[in-house]
Length: 269
Image (cartoon, rainbow, N blue to C red; front, side):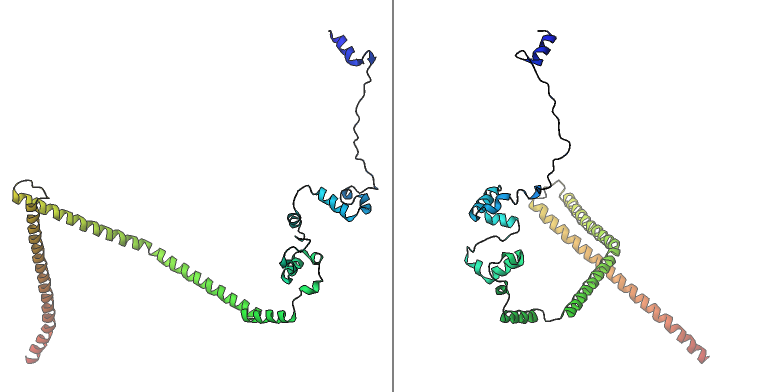
């Protein structure tokens, strides 16, 4: 089939010419001033002919969310229960809560019944006087005084921190000095022990195991001799310091007595 025969078959239907048409789209929106489109779904025209049961049935069918009455009312900020199901729904406290949250339309009783009685007002006033004995201005003064004290504490703490930060370098140097001294003491103890072990081995004349009992005995003897030697050196140093103090005192006394002797000789002469 050539192109001309294909075009002819498309333009004809069972040998009859096919009517060609073109769709026309409306550019302007259709408007009818007599109908309010926004309220069509909310207030149907046939609503005034329906009974209350039919209206409830229609509203139930329009609830596409499938939520129960409690959850739907809570979602839209309405009174949760339209009927009193539990015992506390008839309490004054519950009525006061519904009035405060949902307004006077949510009450099924007169609003005056939820107002506190004279005795309750007096009790509340007495409780407020006991719980808050100070007046409003006195409370403000106390709060201002407390804030001032807290600010002073914070300022004092900041000053202490600044003063301690200034001493950090000194504390660091002291710590380094103490650590160096401790390391020197540990090094001296290790060198002393190594020296005693070497002396014991020289005394024995051969390389002996440090776990041997003879080695331990000889090491204890060497330690005792070393302690005695250190004690003798300490006594000598103490005696030398004592003699030095005596010499300084005697020299100071001689220097004081010399001018007095010279003055006495001058008077006698």
